[in-house]
Length: 329
Image (cartoon, rainbow, N blue to C red; front, side):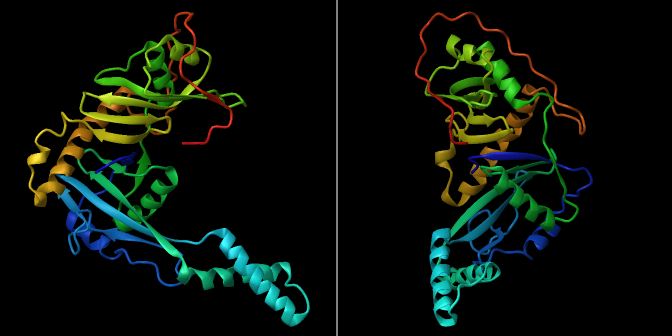
């Protein structure tokens, strides 16, 4: 149900009124793009069944879904069509269009091509825990999350959101865990991470399917590289990757969390999946926040984290790769 999670704190003062929320969501249902409409967004039933409610409540947890559709119109195609229009005008008038007219030509080319463009749809799952005052978006990047948040705040009366910030930075904590060779509490280091140096070289070391409790990894931390992402498992029930921006990626519910799931009837699958996902994550998230020093009070600066100094290393380097031009994740 969730592959990525962007976490936000619901500001005090919001009243969780399900009937009112359903009515307000119904004002903005998803509609496909019109012929010359570049993109559209609206609410769809999270259950995936036509005419089902736009707000589902499972074990007290609110589940919503936002659908977006965007026309895929390559800039090169618009440019080519614009050049054709400009060439025709030049032939008719005997002189090239000016710089100001070029903008109008580009807009004309775009409007002509939009009805012919392919469309791409994306569905974002949204989870609201009214009791905990927490919002979670299945968003893989900040831009996607910001777009969803804007529409959600507009849809729900009195709804406002604050960043979920921790006393200690995720990057600092992840560095300390790698330096110590273990994560705190019920968390365990998995077998993937990415480390970046803070200097102008921006060199990168990535480990995949590789033990992280090694002297080599500790040496990278001691040399100043900082984790931008770290694979973790929690309580042998959920695996995920934590980023330095406090995003949870690649969420996977392990077999111990899914026991009995195969015996669920098809018409009960949505409720079972929702109960499993929110039930596990409702326990994981507070423990993760606690592992990062607890939640930060608004206006309070994050506390620094000291990484333990590793022992000297004499073993040769293992399978890592440095790259000064690594692409962002």
